[in-house]
Image 1 (cartoon, rainbow, N blue to C red):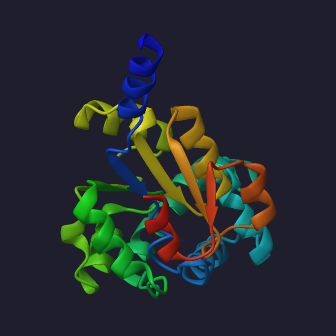
Image 2: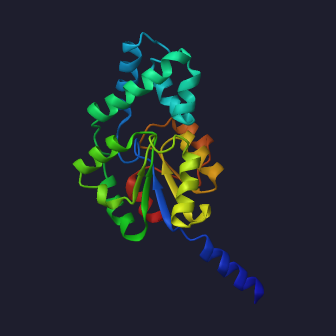
Image 3: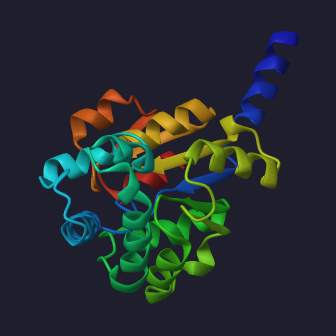
Length: 220
């Protein structure tokens, strides 16, 4: 009897109570747009540190802001390049939305609070979500202007919403996010329609991998 009660209590504690979603790659099909901005900023500052789209893709195999420090960009140029990138993202960033994600967001929002956790910036995210009338489905947007570390963003969500890490599911397309999600103790779902090199995504060992948005509703 005690064993049964313990199992029941544990199951209740581990029930999903909140969903985290990455912005780029998951909600928006934005790799080409992001790649063009990374290349444009490098050209403006006379930098050729990472110009191959495949190598740019691998910047998201870890936290983007940590990765960009290790690709050979002169240290003194980085703050200026980051500020320029932020301006371009806010002004020019209008990627297409991921096919099939809109009805999934609407369905998930009926069951869970959804928080966006992203390396992008709040103004850019809100502008693009507003374009598709989606902002109202998200409780918060936590971009790079909040905290750059996604681990710290996840811990903030736990405190703000009084939820344990194991009661949170983080949906992302990048290995870097999966690693950070695991370090923070949340459950992770990797998606294959965004930025990732699939081999790198699998290596990060998310709890689940899905190939299309509708599959998220079967898990959640």
